[in-house]
Length: 108
Image (cartoon, rainbow, N blue to C red; front, side, top):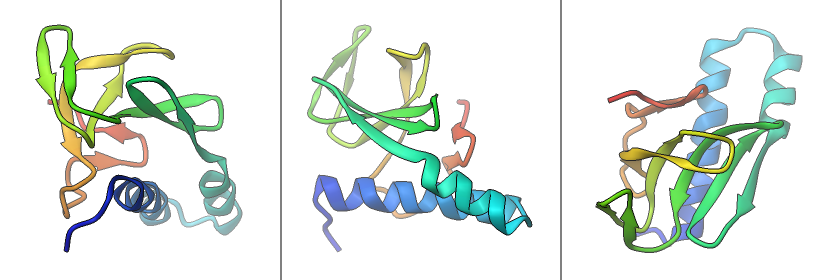
């Protein structure tokens, strides 16, 4: 199944919420967490937010970051509130969810 960027990004956000649901057994906390997920669009990356914290960054188009090429849909950990870390951690187009959790993209 070929998803477009927005569908794949929506699936990632749902997956983040599902990851939290597996971790937490408190219904109110689950709902608050899911409601706190949001998206901020930038020039090169979409930033996935959890309240006022950055969950990670998603590349909007192919490019290069700190000398390393990346592709549309690649996901990065946050290095700072405004910038992604150097290396790609996964892709929104990958069917599995083993490369991230509700806390963020996994470490390498």
